[in-house]
Image 1 (cartoon, one colour):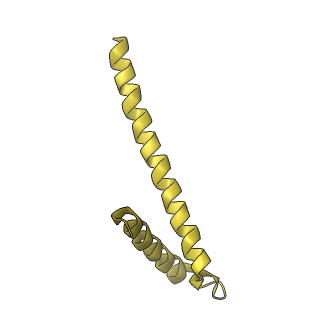
Image 2 (cartoon, helix red, strand yellow):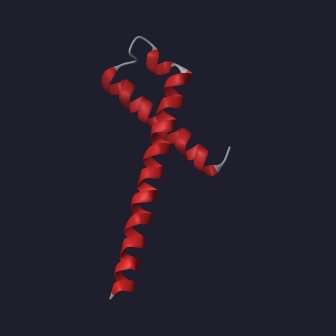
Length: 68
């Protein structure tokens, strides 16, 4: 497991713990492996969106500097 994947797993477990503490297990559904996988995928998608936003922001600044 890569360092990134370990981070995703750890963050997903913490998120599930918070959800269960706040809202319960939903009749055990939040304890199932598929739920962990779903949360991990949400985290990966969020990380990708953040990285793309940051890249777009940085490229936008470079493009503005080229125009000046």
